[in-house]
Length: 221
Image (cartoon, rainbow, N blue to C red; front, side):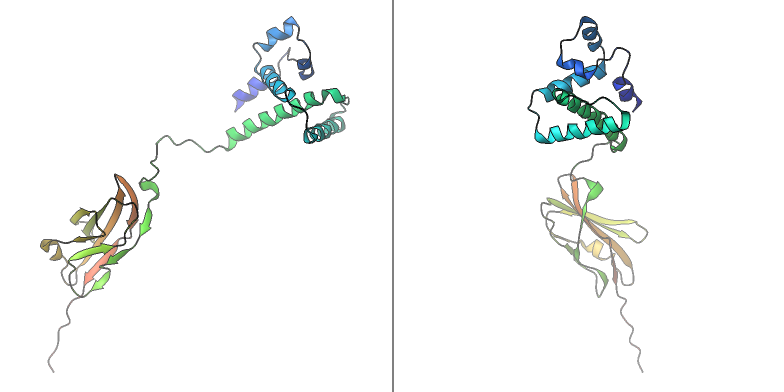
């Protein structure tokens, strides 16, 4: 932040802003070619001087002049210098704004993030199977996700050992016989599904725990 302060700080030979309404002498023109502060004030002065002074601007400059006289005992500005005073105020606002922006802006993110990438995917619900079930399922079902072009399903054991995974364009997928056999009574398995559009994850389901109930043993009296 010190760089912009140094560039806009006054140096010996800086031109008073009132001089911008008059013809500059040779020494002033030479100084203007190398002084960032004076170049900035001249640009602001010319921009403001193109337009008619509005009632709001006049009121603002009168208030600024009053404050300057009250705080610093400066000589009152003449009416024909109102635009000059307004240029001074604009320059101060610009300097304060630059400083605030450099202090308050968020740090840049070096890694580009895709609009629909994984970092903020939505959630959607599955339909079945969920929780304790009476028998092994032959398919997995979930709610449709708008704009999804495919779904990726994965089944794992409770220790995250991979059991099976598959892809489909539908909101359900059939299980092979060897996968169905993994849903043994009393054994818990986990499954989830992710909705994709191309290579981007649109939404993910919560991981579901499924357990086939153990048949009760009937005791003879």
